[in-house]
Length: 478
Image (cartoon, rainbow, N blue to C red):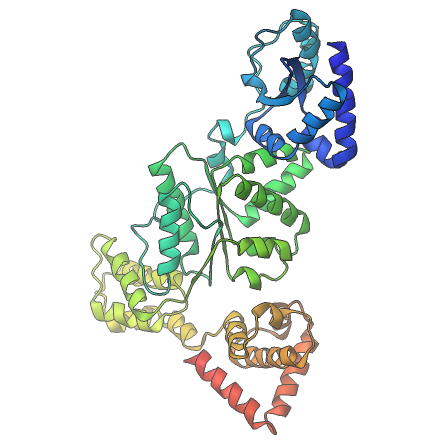
């Protein structure tokens, strides 16, 4: 066995030289030589995830290097340590390899037991999501209200809904990842919760993690702080379905993006489903690396558009039907569906307010009461146009990508529409000049002042530009 250990040491040296210290320390150093039997090298690893990764990325080179050291070796077998069978091994071989196995299985805590020549059957590899319910613990809690049954489908969201159902009902689909994007309060989170609920009811053995991108980042930072990145990788790369909400949160967070990139690739390579949501399409995600944006667009990109009148009315009707004793006249629901068009959350909040008011005060729900109780919300919706709305509409009108509008490009074909968008943001919103600058790629407020003055000057002499601005205002305010 001493000769085998010497050969294994030289193999490890070659692996380190070829793949570098980072890859070696993460994936190859934890490997433990068990024995060589019938021309096959048996190597133990602590987890199933590591076994799969080593087999996919390193096993061929391990076999090549072993063949150099020992021409009789023609194969390498990687096994999870707890599953290794020590059958047909000479006692001396087991004894000699035991210290290495204890290091893998038990870490520093097992060092005291190295004097024992017999293997410790009770020793188990560090647990992670593949062998436990840890996936649910590290994810965010699911809202029981957000199911497919409670999701109202219309033209604006039918593609996203159909894709979400397909992912939930099939263990393998022909698009991966599924990328959902749309504005605030349009149903992205609802669909992601619905997918998770449906999978857990249909197949409880499938491992599902749902969480926000913010929580993903905090868990990664915690892993870095406590030098436990291997456990972090194992948790996230051993799941069957990974769902990350609001991925735009990791914009400009380079370390988190790096880990997200490798996690994403590992899951896709192993045919695990990934579902991502964001407030805009992959190509328009500012501050996200190009290689990540490219991969996010690999599968199906489903846009959830703003709701139309019929969909909003359907949502209100379902909401009222789900509240026992609620008596909301149809004309009131029709009025709310017409007047509150910004997002579904505000719409549901409005119906909750008038039902609560009627219940607590004891007044019947009428049109007059509705207008009185919701006067602040109705006023806000009458004048509300957001900077995001303006940016999207201007980019669409001038046939630009949103990313171009927010970029540092100074070509006139981009700079002029950007100035128009800043001008409209000043005219149609109540946001401050610094706020507007930040929304346009972190620009200074003086840039916004210059843009506003420049457009004010140009509309005096440029009839085409004046017509463009009037047309854009009508689209935004209509």
